Amino acid sequence: MMGYLDNVVVYLANVELGKNNNWLRFQAQIPRLGRSSNYSFEFCGTELQHCLSLTVEDIECLKEMLCSDYGYPPYDIKRAKEVLGQRKEYTIIRRSHKAKDDQD
Image (cartoon, rainbow, N blue to C red; front, top):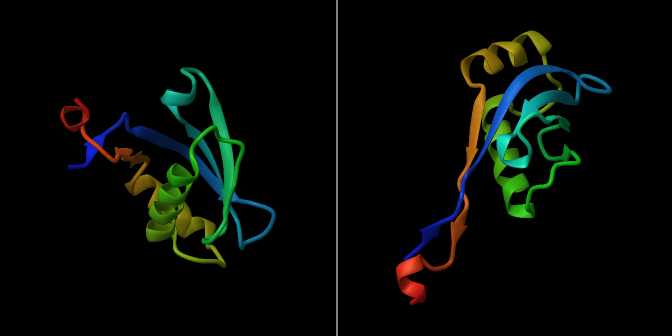
């Protein structure tokens, strides 16, 4: 039986074009990483350039969710802002291999 660890919630505050129209730059808050910390990261559909203190699995999950909503480049910033307006919160569900009851 799979157990659940603490989930990570990423609140997106803003999106703009990154270095070119193949990249989106997000401003986000991730309370689990620090109460008043603002983070930024860039996304291009297959890559996520970041300095976030998240696991590889967390980053892969976030990339999949962003790709599902924003798709692949080239990006239209007007469309990206519309998507951001519809969904500002992404929850990364962390799973353990065993539930607490199974570990006893």
